[in-house]
Amino acid sequence: MLNRSVMFAKQHTPDSVRVLGRRILLETHNAKLRITVPVEDRSPFVNVYHCAVRKTASQWVKSVFSDPIVYRRSGLATYDPRYYRWKDPRIVPPQRIGLSLYLPYKRYRKMPKPDAHRTFFIYRDPRDLLVSSYFSTRDSHTPMGDVLTVRAALRERSQKDGMLYLIEHLTGKGMFNAVRSWVEAPPSETVRLVRYEDLTGDDQFAEMDALMRHCGIDIPPAELTALLEKYSFSRMNERKKAGEISHYRKGKCGDWRNHFDDDIEQAFRNATGDLLDILGYAEPAVARARSTGPQAG
Image (cartoon, rainbow, N blue to C red; front, side, top):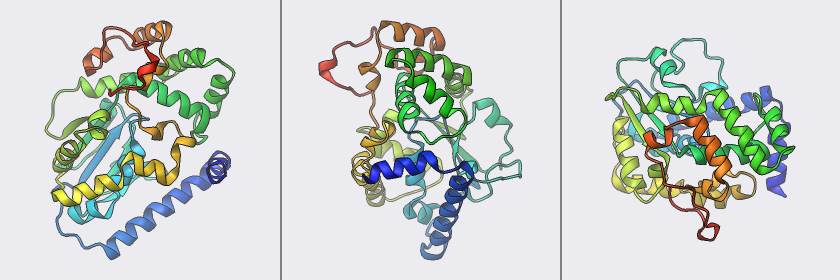
C-alpha cells in the first residue's frame, strides 16, 4: 500500500514542486553535514564530476557520495545541477561533487572546469540499459521530458514491439552514441571509466576504493566496508521494497537474456554497430536458456 502511495505521488506531483522539494532536501542534507560532520581529510580537487547515461545506478552513486563518510574524508558536498537554475557556466559550484551529468564526452570537454578536478563515467552493458529503460519508462519513471509520450507508446505495444520501438527511440536520443563517445575518447588521467558490473559485483570493494582514490578521497578500509554494506542493493531493496515499484533498483546484470530474441538482437546490433565489441560485452549468440536465470554481465 505504501509503495503504491509513493508511486502515485511520484507520478502526479508537478515537476516544479518535485524539483523544489529535491533542492530543499539536498541543501538541508548538505547543511547538516557541514554542521555535524568534522572534515578530517580534504580532496585536493575543487570538483569531482559523476558522468553517466541513465540507468547506470545514478541514485546509488548519489547515496554513496552523499554519505557523511565521504564528506568527512573529502570536504566535498554533493550537487545535482538538475534541481537548480544554475546560471554560472561551470555547472557545478566549487568544492562540490557534481552528480548525474548526462553529457556526451564532447559536451563535457566544452564545460568549463577548474584545473584541479577529477571525472568518472559509469557505463553498463547497453542491452541491460535497454531492458532497464523499458521497464522503468513503461511502469515507474517519474513523468518528465517525453516519458509520458514514450510510456503511452510502450503500453500500447507488446513487450517485444515495445523494445524494438525503444531501441529506435534511444538511438534517436543519442544514448548509445553518448556511451561510445566516452569509451572512444583519448585516455586522460582526469577521467576514469567505470563498469557498472564491476562497481556492483564481487570486486566492488577494490573498484570503489580505486574510484575514491581517483577522486582524491582516501577512505580507510573499515569505513569503506561499512559504506558499501550500508548501500548494498539488497539493503536498499529491503528498505524501499523497490523491487515492487522499480525494475532498475533490482540492479540485475545480464537481465537482457530474459528478454532478447533474434529480432531484438538484430535490431540492437543494427542500431549500435560494434558498441558491444568496443565495451567488451560481445557474446557469440543470444542465450536462450531461460531456466538458468540472469547471469553476471
